Amino acid sequence: MELVDVEYRREGHGWVLRFFIDKEGGVGIDDCAKVSREISAYLEVEDLVPNAYHLEVSSPGLERPIKKKEDFLRFADRRVRIKLRQPLGDQRVLIGTLCGLEGNTVVLALENEKVCIDMENISKARLTL
Image (cartoon, rainbow, N blue to C red; front, side, top):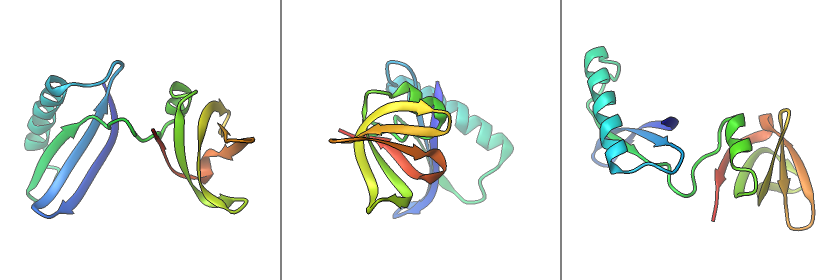
């Protein structure tokens, strides 16, 4: 089981603490329920969250975030959307096929070219359909 992301934010019905989990082959409802029970028990004992909150555990979905170096290797040959901190040419958002990682550089195949993006320049990256 892998922790993909954590969100803690105020929504319409109050504070929400949301954990996104994944595993090879995907996660199911039973996986989410098990992790939810474990997290809930831990948080109850440790009392880490200052406000009342709703706990949610779910899959990151088909358009999951890509955050770690391992993710950029794991999802090679998949279509991705990358938002840059500093534009590349005149583009701040790139959509293409992830070719992989070379050191700290992400290689992305666009329609007519391959581009190299320093990981430090990536604000957000996620799989896309």
